[in-house]
Length: 184
Image (tube, rainbow, N blue to C red):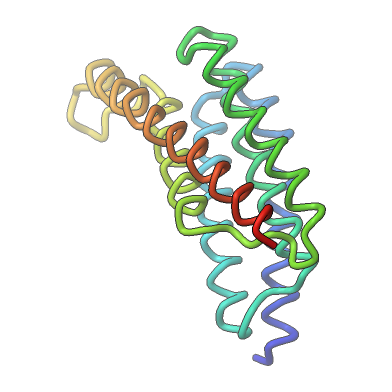
């Protein structure tokens, strides 16, 4: 498969991830936590896959570089807002994270390259996906161990603890992006 086709597939996965955001929010609002979990997991896998495809093509499109971080924000914002509304995460922390995302999205839009993600930015995204998947783990899933409620509570707690380093990485990577932008 040629580089152009790989870039098209990567861009298609990016668009698909953006579309998953609304059904994810609807699933959460309707109490369909299992469906929401699977939609978020699908979004995380598609994020990894589109990045891999872009690298295989020798680099993604400028359009994809601009759209990819935006779709991540759409996908991650839905469960963050739902978790804050339900008291699982403090609202101030979610607002701080979302403000960072808006700031960096604005900064990226002014960059001719789309402002590719730094290593810290990528780590932040991976940590956010992991934290959210743990926080959204349905209490009814016990993995055949007969421990459904206890397992859910434990995984929710682990997700809560992973959220904080993801917030720290988000803020530190934002500072790095802005400093790099000022040097140019």
